[in-house]
Image 1 (cartoon, rainbow, N blue to C red):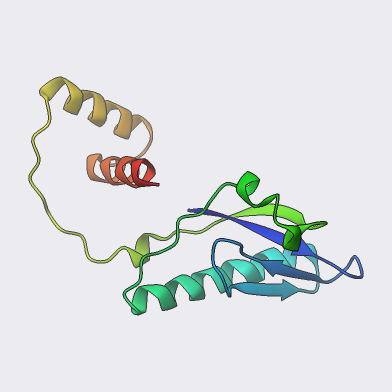
Image 2: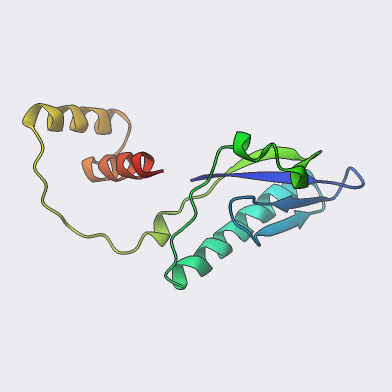
Length: 130
């Protein structure tokens, strides 16, 4: 999942980072790059805590939805890609019925994009539920 983050600096060197879609999740770094690396770890730990508490992971909103918030004025926006799959829980086998031609198209598309049928269907379902 791609989480937007906003970086602020008072001195042009060190940066604080806020994750608008994860209230209470923030980080900092002595350089811009260190701040981005640090916030990846902060997001991962934040999501791990939510998962351990049995809570749903917040879905990331587009940067544009946060631009009107004065708390982020003057900040620099970036997007951090976080693999949230480890928080999804154990996989379960299911049985579904799909029309043969659609299944062939799914398999062709999944293979062309380096995915399995199951991986593609899960990704498609997650995107549809956002």
